[in-house]
Image (tube, rainbow, N blue to C red; front, side, top):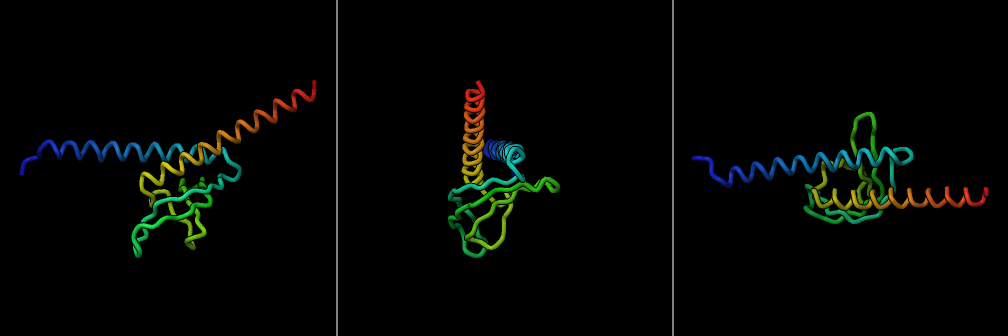
Amino acid sequence: MDKDKFDDKLIKIESKSFEVNMLMAEFVFELLKTFDNKISEIYCELPYYDPDKGYKTLLADAVSLDIESGQIFIFSEMINTAFMWDDLNISAKEIIITELHLKYKSLKLFDNLTEKKQKEEMH
């Protein structure tokens, strides 16, 4: 069977998907390095595929980075063990990225306001 235009398109999709997944992991890796102890509490609902039960929604409590292994872990009280970033689909990853980025920006704004207030009090 000859290769057709859909084979080429599928290869492009898979290639771009891999690239996006790598960019997302790198973004979260770098972002988590800015948090104390390389961990951030979050609160968001994630689609999660449980091999025994199928898709379900998990409430994510925290995301952490193991700097030695380079692994990103997600924690949820709904399951007994942490699971890895690579176990998530792209929509769940996007939800976590949005939560982490929002928290990062909020903390930065708070720090800037606190610093500004301290400077004003000194003068």
